[in-house]
Amino acid sequence: MAAELSPDTRSRLSQRFAERTAELAAEAGMVPVLVAGDAEVASWALELGFPSIPEPAGGLNGAATEGVRWANLSASAWVVLHTDLPLLTRHELDEVLAVVTGGGWVIAPSGDGGTSALGGRGEARFAYGPGSFRLHLGRYPEARIVIKTGFLHDIDSFADLESARQHWRASWLSESA
Image 1: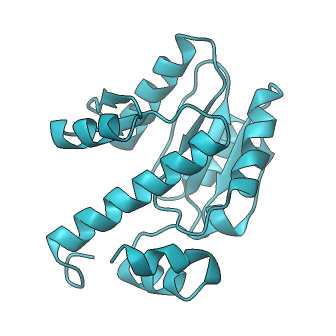
Image 2 (image 1 turned 120 degrees about the vertical axis):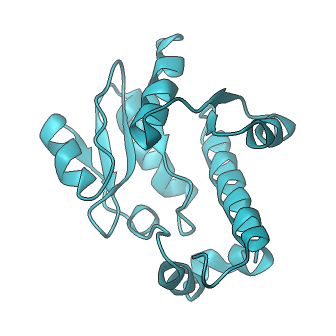
């Protein structure tokens, strides 16, 4: 989105996505933990009242693994939830949370074949990147699949952002950028 949005606008938008997703998770009774790649993001998360952990090497797979390691310290169920989901609702998040708190595995695909949410208990092996839903389903064939609008519409491009802005669930975006 670098060609369409200034660095400041992209930063504010990303921050608002993360804030909204963490707030939804907290409302659902989850403890949002942000995996932060720099000290400024970690500080911002703490200001909002959310713990953060340093982003390890290994990109998204490493970050998800570190988040699960943190959750496993307390033997908690966990959900790796991406923040670029502007149409996500609390009801959709509750559906995912019900599966993991009941002891099951859950995968919510994005519309482009990625993975918007993956959750369970214990250790996990992540395979984020193109086609990750299929790869995760191969690793967790017993997982319940949750296909909902809020998980399907992720933001990977400016066209995705513009599409989301047309949906009534994303009215909050007009206040963000």
